Length: 256
Ligand code: 1GP
Image 1 (spheres, rainbow, N blue to C red):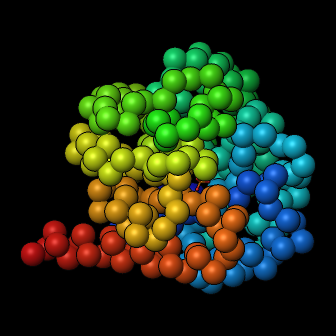
Image 2 (cartoon, protein in one colour):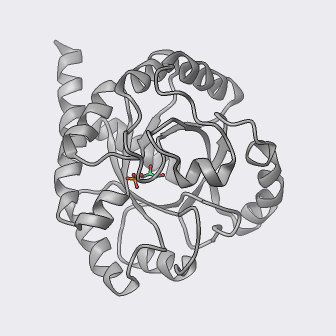
């Protein structure tokens, strides 16, 4: 089973999955083995690794330690072309569809694809949509693209339909790391209504309740990064339970 199939299996079995993002710049490598073991035990379904910059982090070292200390998939969520490694299980092969920057629509892909192929690294084609999150995030600034306005779920839905028609495999609705406000539930709902692709939602999600709302709105996977970095691993169990619990209750509703 490849990594995308494993993610789809999680969605099938649990209704939705909880993904923990690790930014190598913000994680203390010495604490990483314990963090990974604890997070896996607490119910994280998979891990993402990546960041907009690499000021201090050692990408390969962090990735190797992650892989050594979990049985769950470890997936690269690349902030740049320098974040590619054969150690990972897969890489989100991101097409920044909400933007109109050709580098993030095709340019970087032409450079990265032969390397990914040579490494035999699994690419997961991802339609990535940046959504206004109440502040200018690193993703917005670094990608030099304009996010989708918060009050325009129809624009997000049209992008999602286009992504599906283009053959991309998953969608990522992103408010940006540390966003003031997460992607609006109405927008997640509109995308889920018009498009059958699995939806990952992340950026600015700070409570298990908020994570549960995204699942109820139609998210297949919820990502947190900053809040766990700030407040620690003890939060993971609550997030995992909220995501899985919300998915279970949506399923039960569907059966009534
Ligand atoms: C960022 O979606 C992720 O790409 C996670 O965001 O750090 O705000 O949780 P946070």
